[in-house]
Amino acid sequence: SAVISQKPSRDICQRGTSLTIQCQVDSQVTMMFWYRQQPGQSLTLIATANQGSEATYESGFVIDKFPISRPNLTFSTLTVSNMSPEDSSIYLCSVGGAPGLAGGHEQYFGPGTRLTVT
Amino acid sequence: GQQLNQSPQSMFIQEGEDVSMNCTSSSIFNTWLWYKQDPGEGPVLLIALYKAGELTSNGRLTAQFGITRKDSFLNISASIPSDVGIYFCAVPKDKFYFGSGTKLNVKP
Image 1 (cartoon, rainbow over the protein chains, first blue to last red):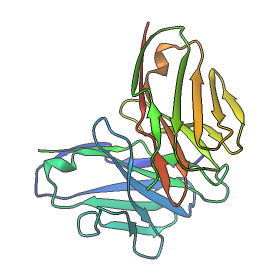
Image 2: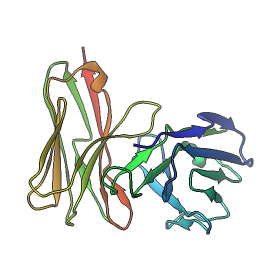
Image 3: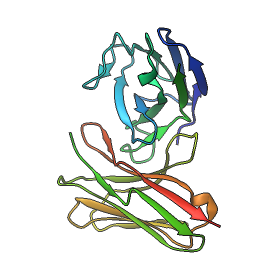
Image 4: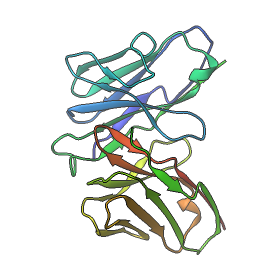
C-alpha cells in the first residue's frame, strides 16, 4: 500500500481565514481524493483531484470554497477558504484505484488534518 | 447515492469477548471493504472482499461477503484493548461509499 503523509496534522484557525492542506504520496498514483469527516461522523467525499485538470467536486462542495491543486502524480493540496466554525472537521486525503495498488478497488488514507475554526 | 446501513452504532464489550458488526444495502456490490480508524488517525484497510460468499481472515478478524452481494459482516474474536476504534464498511461504485461506522469500546 502507498505511504501517505499530510501537513499540517492539526491547526486552529480564525474564522474568515484560509488553510491549505498538503498531501504527499510515496509513489505515483492516478486517483487522489479529499474527504471531510465531521466529529463523530463518517467520511464524506469532497472531490477527486485530477492531475492536469480541474478537480471534480461532489454535490454540496464548490471550488471557490475548497480549491484543489494536483500538480503531479504524488502531490495534492486542498484549501479551506473563508473558514467558519462549521468547517471544523478532519480532512483526509486518499489514493486508490490505481494499477499496482492491491486490488485496484481499494482506497488508502493519509493520517488526516484536524482543523478547528474559532 | 448509495446508502450503507451499518450496525451496531456502538459497542461496549469486555476484553476477550467476540464482536460482530455488519453492513447492509439495497444495492448489489462487487467489492466490500472494512476499515478501522484509530483516534486521531486516518482509516486503515483491514480486509477486502471481492467475491460473493467469500470469507477472509486477517488475524483475529474475519469478514464475509454476503451471498446476495448486498451485505457484509466483520467479526473480531477474543477482543483486546487495542481493538478500540471506529470500524467502517465501504464499497466502491462510481465513488467510494462508507457506512456510518461502529464505535468499539473494549474494557480491560
